[in-house]
Image (cartoon, rainbow, N blue to C red):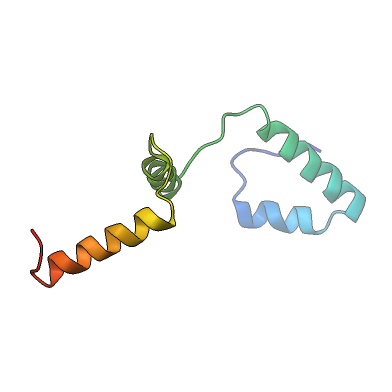
Length: 84
C-alpha cells in the first residue's frame, strides 16, 4: 500500500479504518517498528517531571523517622516563635 504523504490525517484514517483487521495490525506493527529507530521525544511536561525527580533524588539518603520528627518539631517551634 502506497500513500502520498500529503494526505490529511482524517482522510488517511478513513482509508485505514476500511482495511481488514489483519492489514490494520500489519500497518500498526510497521508504524511501531519505524518508531523504534527514532530517539524518543519528551514533552515540556515530561522534561519538568524528570527534572523534579532528579531534584528529589538528592545526594544523601532520605531522613529516617526520628530525623523527620526532629525536623517537624524544630519547624513547629520556629513557627510559634519559640526557637530561632
